[in-house]
Image (cartoon, rainbow, N blue to C red; front, side):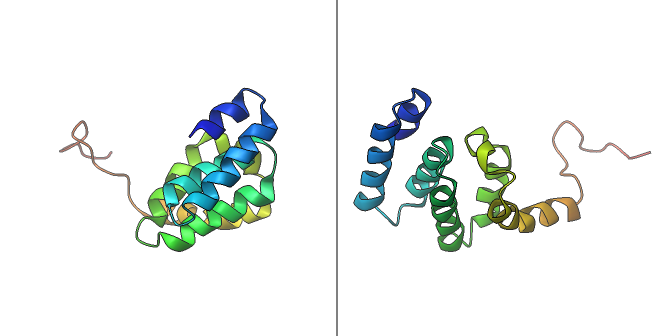
Length: 114
């Protein structure tokens, strides 16, 4: 999304205008809403970023876990990590990930734990 590039380039006003325009054009596009959340996080507009990210998780119940896992490592969201709303949003993913055994990969298939 071009608004992210603009945010990285320090073009704050233009980045925010592009993000707002994208939200109006297709407010139900979860990929777009996620990217808009990233833009607002990069711009320091944390509450707006969280509004968009929470909307993504609310609309994508089937893939919410995937989004949460992605959010854990997306560096665009680093400004949000200490925010209580972000931590509450991530809590279900953290517990789901820690409760399941490590995935077996082709590299570890057949290995036994010692």
